[in-house]
Amino acid sequence: MKPTLLILAAGMASRYGSMKQIDGFGPNGETIIDYSIYDAINAGFGKVVFIIKEEFVDNFKAIFEPKLAGRIETDYVFQNFDLKQFGIEEEIYREKPWGTAHAILSGRKVIKEPFCVINADDYYGFDAFKKMVDFLTTEVTDSNYAIIGYQIGKTLSEFGAVSRGVCKVDAAGNLEEIVERTKVYPKDGNIFYEEDGEEFPLSYETPVSMNFWGFTPAVFKITEELFREFAEANKDKPKAEFFIPLIGENLVKSNIATFKVVPTANKWFGVTYKEDKPYVQDSIDQLVKNGTYPEKLWN
Image 1 (tube, rainbow, N blue to C red):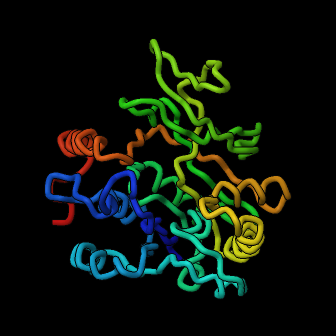
Image 2: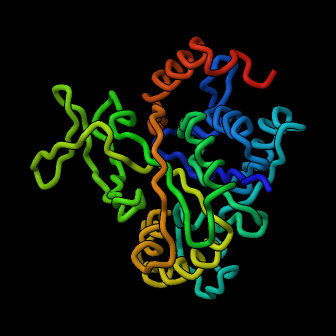
Image 3: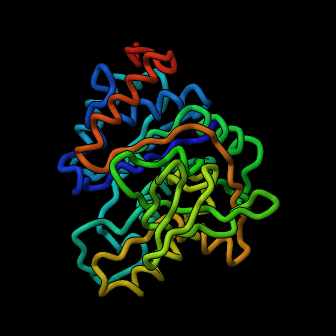
């Protein structure tokens, strides 16, 4: 059974100012999602599931169905504010969804095979998809999951400091913890993070999480239990978010599962602000020029 690609595309993109998930970046208006799905198909994924807001479903189908028909199976699931589906009767007011870990629960009824989760607005590269397929078809179990580890030096921005989840890895190559460094930047040919006004160095190859995770469907039951606890504990905190690393941290610290940190030397890039768009367009243009992708992706 081929693994499934689960794409987180329900974000509101408030900092970008429009729906960056379906904005065009390639030479023929291709989205970043297009390149991820293209790589996923070539790597061996058998299905793609989009997590979106229900009101966007027609837009997504109009953009992706003509391209993907006959190439890969597609499905759409919706992230919403309905807590009763998780056995939570109390109404909790929210302006924004509950976060990425809550989002993946949207796929629990349509995913029955090993799967990986990615962001819609991040470019990951073919190597990451191929390594994840290999893991999901040969190594994954209900107690052995994976995360792709990017070299921090290949994830930095030219436009200022970034936040990165630095992976602490044990001797066996498994994740011990993810430490969020909120101000990481290059300086004088080196990489530093700042904490409490002090500067600390990081090596170029330090592995970081860019939200590329591999699971089996067993993770849904665990995540649902954790979400109920999180929602109860944060019902008076409308900005609290239930992120995927919280699942990983819980599973690792409770010895329920391990996470293999699978290294990739691919360059990552993504889009957060409108100012990022020209850089992303140029990066994709270079990948087309060097032959990584055809100019017309879906011919």
